Length: 500
Image 1 (cartoon, rainbow, N blue to C red):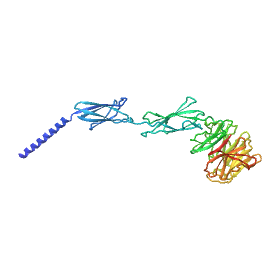
Image 2: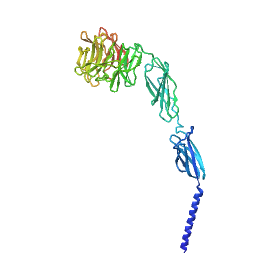
Image 3: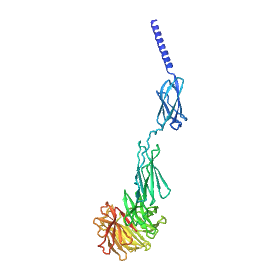
Image 4: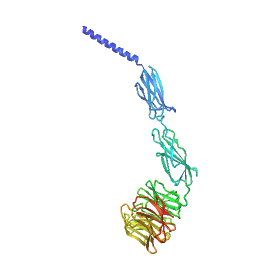
């Protein structure tokens, strides 16, 4: 009986404890509701799908299409309610929850980039302020930085004082731009804006530069290598130079046609070479060749011809000689070698029915120099199957003389290096050859000779025979006494001359 009474007492105590606990939970934890709305700061546009949570933790909910939310069954107490949404900074609002009461909170969320700073105003570096450009091409460069290292996108605006044209170059990812052609004699105004696509664009100061007037008296053409590309220049008798082609393209072997008042030249794109023409000031560049292109054993050694009074341009294509109208129409085969040798150089006189050719093997050697008529009949043999290299082939104005350069050492190697290249004139009337290099410095090569318009001089390239030194253009005066030949420096760091 005592044991049974003790059991009853224990059960009773547990029942009282259980009742006491239930009374504490129900009495101390009444529930309320948190409602609210999430909008964008400034515009008050609702923000849908914002994530709403609280601390202490209750339920997590998301706003509807109107930016509204409701959290039910929130225990009475003090809460910090948080709103998160993509593209916005997290926001917090306090909420005091009371039993059976709905408390309302409103979130005004700032965009995530609200504290982002804009890029610095671009600083213009080139062309320099009030610079006078000696070219129709310009390289614009500037600098700007972003405090958060955001990507910067640029827009360049370009105007001139000759017309109302406004050029806009947008979405530039790099702080530079190459542009051509500029207007000769014009003054230009340029400005750059920078944006991180977060803040409003910032503007640079306005820069100014000028372009020289058209070089109408430039009779000399030559080439310089700039950063790996060949670039064509013109110059007058006083040595004033003007850049004609872009430094971003490989352009070389210029030849001016006096009648057309245009310049033809070669331009390479990868392994392919095409003939182009342009005005004497470098404007109006036009591609001439398309399907059949100038080619041979070495694209740097091939040459073409544009006879003075002709509209046809002659060029080699392996073992064949083609001609094409300077507008790119009417291509036709003129001649094909009989032994499969490659044509590398050509000069043509249409009036006198003479074509001068240089041919060679696949390595550029086994040289043949000869003239033919337009029927392919051999007229003169100048060199036949000789060892060593040759470069430069030019008919005189009278078409009685053939000027060329030949390496008398006969040296042959895979790099087409020459050890002692000299200038020679072949007389077609009496079948004689005369050396005209005069006192050429030992260890140098004379290359790429062209007759002066009056045939009293020769212009050519002279360089060390090491194959890597600077090339210079010189003039060689032709005297009756071959021992009294004068040599003068004309253009430094230049090659592939033309003189019309």
